[in-house]
Amino acid sequence: MRPDVPLVILELPIGGEHGESYRAVLKPYLEDREILSENFSKSMRTLVDDKLEFSLPLAFVEDGKHYVVTLNAINSAGKMNEVRKFTFYVKKN
Image (cartoon, rainbow, N blue to C red; front, side, top):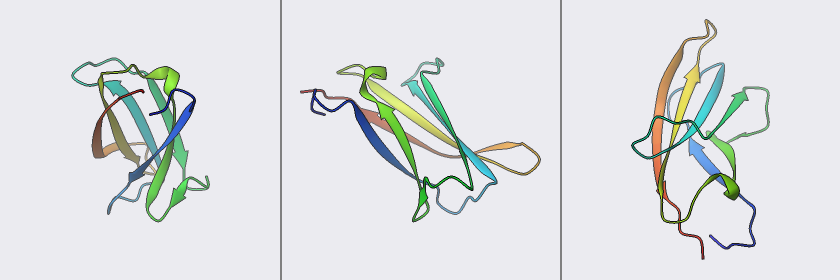
């Protein structure tokens, strides 16, 4: 990632799970400390081709560290089901 880019958009595929809404949570890998979360409703324009666009300001992540984004579907009763987990490594140039 270039240091002059303040924000990246992570495209999170939702697969076959379709909830009333979704929640994405960013945590450091192997830590249970939430750094950033975003809620997505069906009415939001962030669902494109069965992918959610998770905006990640680079100020929230450190160079040389691993992170995990957990994507949860939320049904009409408010119950959360984990859809997927995504891991990535940050390399800032």
